[in-house]
Amino acid sequence: MPLIERSSYTRPPFYQFNGHLQTVLPAILRRVETPYERERLTLPDGDFLDLDWIDRGSRRLVILTHGLEGNSDRHYMKGMANLFAEQYPGAIDASKLDEVREWRDFDNFFSAPLNGYEDAADFYRRASAQNYMAGTDRPILLVNAVNDPILPPECSPVALCEQHDKIFLEMPQKGGHVGFTLPKAGYAWSEYRALEWCGG
Image 1 (spheres, rainbow, N blue to C red):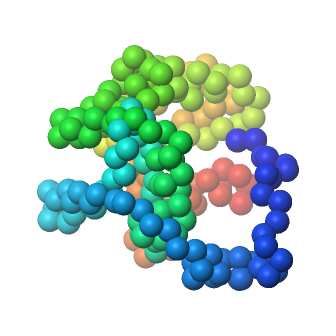
Image 2 (image 1 turned 30 degrees about the vertical axis):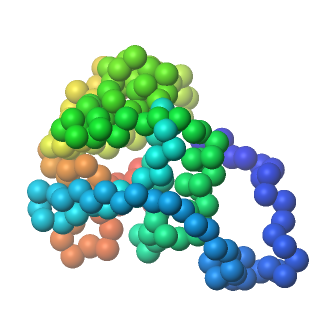
Protein backbone atom coordinates (compact mmCIF):
# COMPACT_ATOMS: atom_id res chain seq x y z
CA MET A 1 0.00 0.00 0.00
CA PRO A 2 1.57 3.31 -1.02
CA LEU A 3 2.28 5.89 1.63
CA ILE A 4 0.73 9.31 1.15
CA GLU A 5 3.63 11.62 1.84
CA ARG A 6 1.68 14.90 1.99
CA SER A 7 -1.58 14.73 3.88
CA SER A 8 -4.36 17.10 2.90
CA TYR A 9 -4.92 17.75 6.62
CA THR A 10 -2.75 20.80 7.17
CA ARG A 11 -3.23 21.83 10.78
CA PRO A 12 -5.76 21.92 13.62
CA PRO A 13 -7.08 25.13 15.21
CA PHE A 14 -4.41 27.04 17.14
CA TYR A 15 -5.84 26.12 20.56
CA GLN A 16 -5.45 22.40 19.82
CA PHE A 17 -1.69 22.54 20.13
CA ASN A 18 -1.04 18.90 21.05
CA GLY A 19 -2.36 15.43 20.34
CA HIS A 20 -4.28 15.20 23.62
CA LEU A 21 -6.27 18.36 22.93
CA GLN A 22 -6.77 17.33 19.30
CA THR A 23 -8.33 14.11 20.59
CA VAL A 24 -10.39 15.30 23.57
CA LEU A 25 -11.77 18.65 22.39
CA PRO A 26 -13.62 17.37 19.31
CA ALA A 27 -15.22 14.67 21.47
CA ILE A 28 -16.41 17.29 23.96
CA LEU A 29 -17.21 20.27 21.73
CA ARG A 30 -18.50 18.76 18.49
CA ARG A 31 -22.24 18.12 18.43
CA VAL A 32 -23.50 16.12 15.47
CA GLU A 33 -27.15 15.17 15.00
CA THR A 34 -27.74 12.08 12.93
CA PRO A 35 -31.19 10.64 12.16
CA TYR A 36 -30.33 6.95 12.57
CA GLU A 37 -32.91 4.23 12.24
CA ARG A 38 -31.80 1.29 14.38
CA GLU A 39 -32.28 -2.30 13.29
CA ARG A 40 -31.36 -5.10 15.69
CA LEU A 41 -30.25 -8.44 14.29
CA THR A 42 -30.46 -11.32 16.75
CA LEU A 43 -27.64 -13.78 16.16
CA PRO A 44 -27.90 -17.59 16.47
CA ASP A 45 -25.78 -17.57 19.66
CA GLY A 46 -28.20 -15.21 21.42
CA ASP A 47 -26.04 -12.12 20.98
CA PHE A 48 -27.18 -9.24 18.79
CA LEU A 49 -25.89 -6.73 16.27
CA ASP A 50 -27.32 -3.22 16.03
CA LEU A 51 -27.31 -1.60 12.59
CA ASP A 52 -27.88 2.16 12.49
CA TRP A 53 -29.15 3.26 9.09
CA ILE A 54 -29.37 6.60 7.36
CA ASP A 55 -31.59 5.93 4.38
CA ARG A 56 -31.61 8.86 2.00
CA GLY A 57 -32.73 6.78 -0.96
CA SER A 58 -29.25 6.22 -2.42
CA ARG A 59 -28.32 3.15 -4.48
CA ARG A 60 -24.93 3.19 -2.75
CA LEU A 61 -24.12 1.60 0.58
CA VAL A 62 -21.32 2.73 2.86
CA ILE A 63 -20.56 0.59 5.88
CA LEU A 64 -18.90 2.47 8.73
CA THR A 65 -17.46 0.54 11.64
CA HIS A 66 -16.23 2.03 14.87
CA GLY A 67 -13.31 0.84 16.96
CA LEU A 68 -13.44 -1.46 19.96
CA GLU A 69 -14.33 1.27 22.46
CA GLY A 70 -16.47 3.33 20.06
CA ASN A 71 -20.10 3.29 19.00
CA SER A 72 -22.34 4.84 16.37
CA ASP A 73 -23.03 7.85 18.60
CA ARG A 74 -19.43 9.08 18.53
CA HIS A 75 -18.99 12.44 16.81
CA TYR A 76 -16.65 11.02 14.16
CA MET A 77 -19.12 8.25 13.26
CA LYS A 78 -22.09 10.63 13.04
CA GLY A 79 -20.10 13.18 11.07
CA MET A 80 -18.88 10.58 8.58
CA ALA A 81 -22.38 9.10 8.21
CA ASN A 82 -23.91 12.54 7.58
CA LEU A 83 -21.26 13.52 5.05
CA PHE A 84 -21.70 10.34 3.00
CA ALA A 85 -25.49 10.58 3.20
CA GLU A 86 -25.32 14.15 1.86
CA GLN A 87 -22.91 13.28 -0.94
CA TYR A 88 -24.65 10.10 -2.11
CA PRO A 89 -28.41 10.58 -2.01
CA GLY A 90 -30.53 7.89 -3.65
CA ALA A 91 -32.03 4.50 -2.77
CA ILE A 92 -30.50 1.44 -1.09
CA ASP A 93 -32.59 -1.70 -1.22
CA ALA A 94 -32.26 -2.72 2.42
CA SER A 95 -34.92 -5.40 1.89
CA LYS A 96 -32.22 -7.55 0.27
CA LEU A 97 -30.63 -7.96 3.70
CA ASP A 98 -33.33 -10.51 4.52
CA GLU A 99 -32.06 -12.66 1.64
CA VAL A 100 -28.44 -12.70 2.80
CA ARG A 101 -27.53 -16.18 4.04
CA GLU A 102 -23.80 -16.20 3.30
CA TRP A 103 -20.97 -13.88 2.19
CA ARG A 104 -21.65 -14.53 -1.50
CA ASP A 105 -25.23 -13.28 -1.10
CA PHE A 106 -24.03 -10.04 0.48
CA ASP A 107 -21.51 -9.57 -2.31
CA ASN A 108 -24.12 -10.35 -4.98
CA PHE A 109 -26.63 -7.84 -3.58
CA PHE A 110 -24.32 -5.09 -2.36
CA SER A 111 -20.55 -5.30 -2.88
CA ALA A 112 -20.60 -6.21 -6.58
CA PRO A 113 -23.23 -3.77 -7.91
CA LEU A 114 -21.99 -0.90 -5.76
CA ASN A 115 -18.50 -1.32 -7.20
CA GLY A 116 -19.42 -1.83 -10.84
CA TYR A 117 -19.21 -5.64 -11.01
CA GLU A 118 -21.84 -7.93 -12.55
CA ASP A 119 -22.13 -10.25 -9.57
CA ALA A 120 -20.12 -11.83 -6.76
CA ALA A 121 -18.22 -14.13 -9.13
CA ASP A 122 -17.18 -11.19 -11.32
CA PHE A 123 -16.22 -9.23 -8.18
CA TYR A 124 -14.10 -12.09 -6.82
CA ARG A 125 -12.42 -12.69 -10.19
CA ARG A 126 -11.58 -9.08 -11.07
CA ALA A 127 -10.86 -7.67 -7.59
CA SER A 128 -8.70 -10.56 -6.38
CA ALA A 129 -5.18 -9.83 -5.14
CA GLN A 130 -4.13 -12.87 -7.16
CA ASN A 131 -4.33 -10.65 -10.25
CA TYR A 132 -1.40 -8.60 -8.96
CA MET A 133 0.75 -10.97 -6.92
CA ALA A 134 2.58 -12.67 -9.79
CA GLY A 135 4.55 -9.51 -10.54
CA THR A 136 6.20 -9.32 -7.12
CA ASP A 137 9.93 -9.57 -6.70
CA ARG A 138 9.68 -9.51 -2.88
CA PRO A 139 9.14 -12.54 -0.67
CA ILE A 140 5.53 -12.91 0.45
CA LEU A 141 4.21 -15.31 3.08
CA LEU A 142 0.54 -16.24 2.86
CA VAL A 143 -0.98 -18.11 5.81
CA ASN A 144 -4.46 -19.57 5.53
CA ALA A 145 -5.90 -22.42 7.58
CA VAL A 146 -7.50 -25.30 5.71
CA ASN A 147 -10.48 -25.10 8.09
CA ASP A 148 -10.99 -21.34 7.54
CA PRO A 149 -14.78 -20.87 7.31
CA ILE A 150 -14.46 -17.57 5.44
CA LEU A 151 -11.66 -18.36 2.97
CA PRO A 152 -11.72 -22.08 2.11
CA PRO A 153 -8.66 -23.70 0.47
CA GLU A 154 -9.95 -23.02 -3.05
CA CYS A 155 -9.45 -19.29 -2.37
CA SER A 156 -5.70 -19.79 -1.93
CA PRO A 157 -3.43 -19.28 -4.97
CA VAL A 158 -1.87 -22.75 -4.78
CA ALA A 159 -0.92 -22.97 -8.48
CA LEU A 160 0.68 -19.52 -8.43
CA CYS A 161 2.67 -20.33 -5.30
CA GLU A 162 3.91 -23.62 -6.76
CA GLN A 163 5.37 -21.75 -9.74
CA HIS A 164 6.56 -18.52 -8.08
CA ASP A 165 9.86 -18.40 -6.22
CA LYS A 166 8.86 -15.42 -4.04
CA ILE A 167 5.35 -16.34 -2.88
CA PHE A 168 5.11 -18.88 -0.07
CA LEU A 169 1.80 -20.41 1.01
CA GLU A 170 1.49 -22.10 4.41
CA MET A 171 -1.80 -23.88 5.08
CA PRO A 172 -2.06 -25.39 8.58
CA GLN A 173 -4.98 -27.80 8.96
CA LYS A 174 -6.43 -25.79 11.83
CA GLY A 175 -6.58 -22.13 12.83
CA GLY A 176 -9.94 -20.89 11.58
CA HIS A 177 -10.16 -17.44 10.03
CA VAL A 178 -7.20 -15.51 11.44
CA GLY A 179 -7.50 -17.35 14.76
CA PHE A 180 -4.41 -19.51 15.36
CA THR A 181 -4.77 -19.36 19.14
CA LEU A 182 -1.89 -20.73 21.22
CA PRO A 183 -2.51 -21.88 24.80
CA LYS A 184 -1.05 -19.55 27.41
CA ALA A 185 0.52 -17.28 24.79
CA GLY A 186 0.15 -13.54 24.43
CA TYR A 187 0.15 -13.72 20.65
CA ALA A 188 -1.42 -15.89 17.98
CA TRP A 189 0.65 -18.47 16.10
CA SER A 190 0.28 -16.45 12.89
CA GLU A 191 1.83 -13.42 14.60
CA TYR A 192 4.81 -15.46 15.80
CA ARG A 193 5.06 -16.99 12.31
CA ALA A 194 5.14 -13.55 10.67
CA LEU A 195 7.89 -12.43 13.04
CA GLU A 196 9.85 -15.60 12.33
CA TRP A 197 9.39 -15.06 8.59
CA CYS A 198 10.83 -11.57 8.88
CA GLY A 199 13.90 -12.93 10.62
CA GLY A 200 12.88 -12.13 14.18
